[in-house]
Length: 70
Ligand code: FES
Image (cartoon, rainbow, N blue to C red; front, side, top):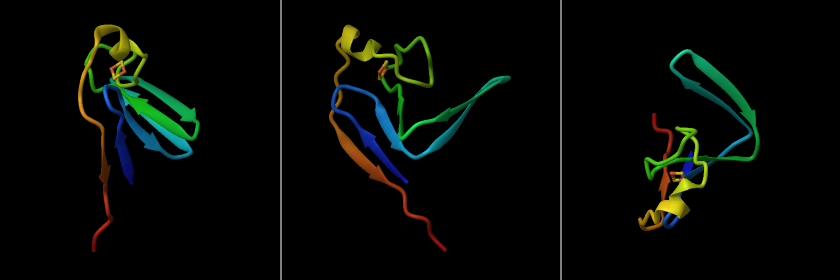
C-alpha cells in the first residue's frame, strides 16, 4: 500500500474500491483514489472536502509505503 502526503493537502490512497466505515455509517466508493483529510477541517471526515486550501493548511509532502511482511 502506498500513501501520498500531498503538500499542504490530504493523504491520497490509490485503489479501486474503498469501504469507509464511520460509526454506524458505511459507504462504498469505487474510484481510483481517495483523499483523506489531515488538516482536521473537513466537513466530510475522514474524506477531504477541500477545506485545507481555504484554511491555509501547511504541511510537507511525502510518501509512506507499507510493505507486507512474513
Ligand atoms: S486535508 Fe483537505 S479538508 Fe483536510
